[in-house]
Length: 147
Image (cartoon, rainbow, N blue to C red):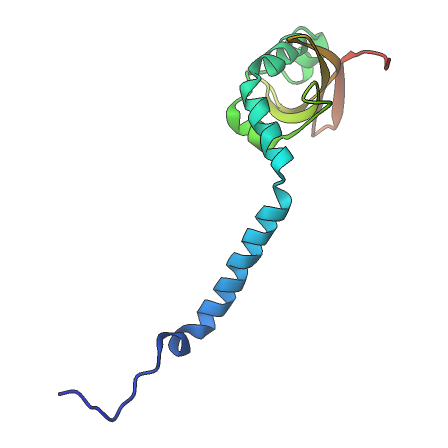
């Protein structure tokens, strides 16, 4: 038998204590993601995904450096998640790039930094460095003088 005298509270009155903080957290996260992900950043990452040759040639040059082989080991090809985690900035109508991505060597992990510009369909590297922690080292693979 149902008691008609007892009024049930509406859903919001019963659940406001967890609903409001959750709603504010969701709005904050959406705002943060919208502010931190600019359209240029998304297109730069997409361009880096499609331009595998840029990374392959830089790793090939790094793997020829005896200092890299001694400290980091042979560097493995870059996986797609490393590009997403990294920092990629194209400029000059996508003809110049500065990027930093995670690399895995046979001995240690590090960061590969590339500065390059496009000559036709080929990338010309201005600077390639590999940084590692513990101990903090930076190995310059290639450095062209500024023109």
